[in-house]
Image (tube, rainbow, N blue to C red; front, side, top):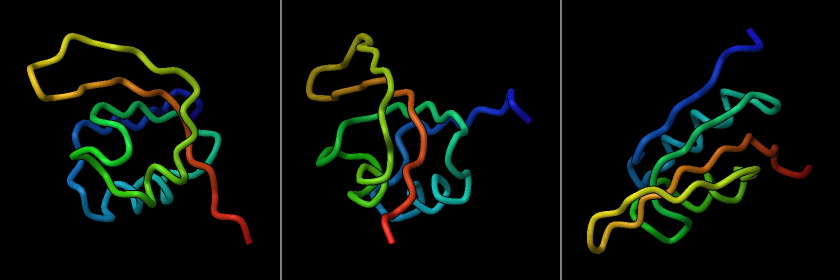
Length: 78
């Protein structure tokens, strides 16, 4: 429904987060909590296909870079 939101918090650095994002589809909101690309969350495929529309900074632990990113899936170009 139009009220569905996918929430991902610190997903593992394999391709699981990307697979979930792709299955979720475009035009559906995703809230991602974790580090940016190159950090300790998700993989490059995820970040290559996650369009961030808004980013919020939140309090962080030393050495841990938590961000809240709100966006959606961007399909691969064919």
